[in-house]
Amino acid sequence: MKCSFADARRPKPEGWTVHSPCIGPIRRWLDPEQPLANVRTLADTIDSSLSARRFQAILLALFAGLAVALALVGGSGALQELGLR
Image (cartoon, rainbow, N blue to C red; front, side):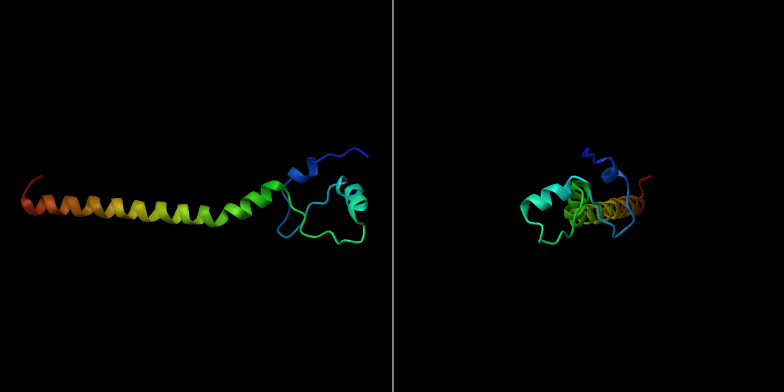
């Protein structure tokens, strides 16, 4: 049996796990009585571990953009009050 991870790189529907043909012999060698659960690709593991930081970075970028926009509006309003155009 040739071990190929080409199927693991294909996108899977939400909730599916990847079962490679290489996992079976390794599992039987280690302990065949142990259940095999939560098998995921490395990309899925990295994505799930970085999702909170990604959300925080996007939220920070949105608030930073809002702060810049408010500063520009406030700066232009202050210049108009001073009579400078």
